[in-house]
Length: 445
Image 1 (tube, rainbow, N blue to C red):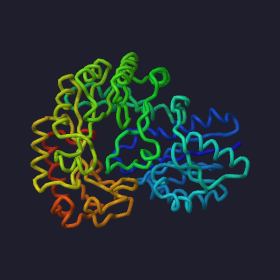
Image 2 (tube, helix red, strand yellow):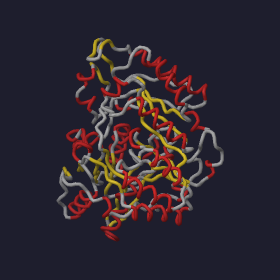
Image 3 (cartoon, one colour):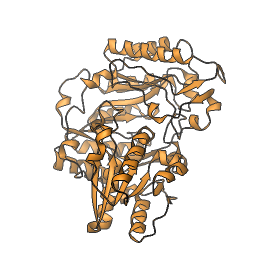
Image 4 (cartoon, rainbow, N blue to C red):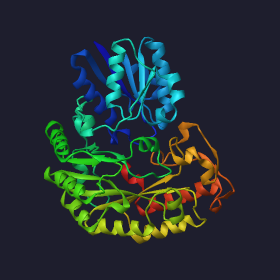
C-alpha cells in the first residue's frame, strides 16, 4: 500500500485560515480514493493553526507527499519539503498549482515531479507511474477536463468541526445569521476574463472560459453537506458565483434555491440584471461581494477589468433593492491612480453606501500580466520576496504595510504617485472605513 499525504500549509497570512476550505485537497484525494481504492491510503495533513516551526511534528511519514503551491505559501512549503527530506529521505514529493506553473524549472529542483495545468488526469498518471517505477519529472495536461465527470469532493479527511462551523454568514446590519452552521463550496472552474493583476492568468491562458457544474451535481453536493454535516448555509467561493449566461444562471440559482439553503458569494459587476438580482434573493442569497477594484476609470482600463464605475453603482443599487448585503473589493495603488484617489474613493463609498469594503494594497504576483511585463505599466522594480506579497490588513490592529513594487516617476499615463503616498492613502482609507464601521475589522467580531 502507498501512503499519500496531501499537505495544506498554515496560511498564517490570513487572519482566519479556517474561513475557507482546502478544496483542491478534498477534490484530488476523493479522485485518488475512487480510482486506486485499497491500493493507497490517503491523508490530508492540515497545518492551519500550527506554528511553522512546529509543523514537522504534525506530518506523518508517507511514501508520497502532494503539494498545491501558491505564491503566498511558497516559502513555507519550501521549508516543509526540505525538513521532510531529512526526516523521511525516501519520500517522493509531487507538486502542482499556480506558482509551480509559473516557475517550472525552479520547481523541478525542489520536487521530484510537477504537474502543470488541470490535475485530475495527470495525478493519477503520476501515481501509477510511481508504482511502476517510471515517475516522470513533468506532467502537463493538454485537454480541458470535464468537471462533471468527477464526484463532488468528500470531506471526511478532516474532523466534522472543520467543515461545519458558525460565524460564516455574519451580516453587518442583521444579527442572527452568524448562528447558522455553514461551510464553503465551489461550483465552477475558470474565468473568461483576463484582468492584468490576476494571479491565475496562466490557467486562463491554457484553459480559457468558465465551466459551471451541472444542476444535478450542485444539488447532490448541497444535500450531502446538509445530511452529513448539518449545513444550513453556504459561502460560494467561486471567482464568479453567478453564471454570465442568463439561461445557465437561472437554472443555477433555481437549483440552489430548491435546497432551501442560505448562501452568499461573489459576482461580476456586469453580470447582474434586475431579474437575476431578484432570483438571487429568492434562492436564499443574503450577501454578495464584487470587485469594484477602483473608482478611477483610467485604472480600470489599464488593468483590463472591462467594467465601468457607473456599472458598479448600478449593480450595488440593484442588490440593495433586493435586500442583499453588498460587499465591495477595492485596491489602492493601481496603475493610473490620480493624486486625489482618496477623495474620489470616499465620495464613491458615501454615494453607494456599501455594507462592507474590503480594501487591499496593490501587490504584484507571479503569473499576472503586470508581473510578466512591468514596463507596460510604468513599473521599474518588483520585490520577489514572496513572503511580502500579502499585506497585513485584518491580521493586526496596527499594520505597517510596504509596497512590493515601485513605479517610474514618469509612466505611460503620466506622473506616478510616490510609494510613501500610496501607503498613506491606503492607511487613511482604512481608518475612515473603521470609523464608519464598514472595514474588514467587522469579520473579527
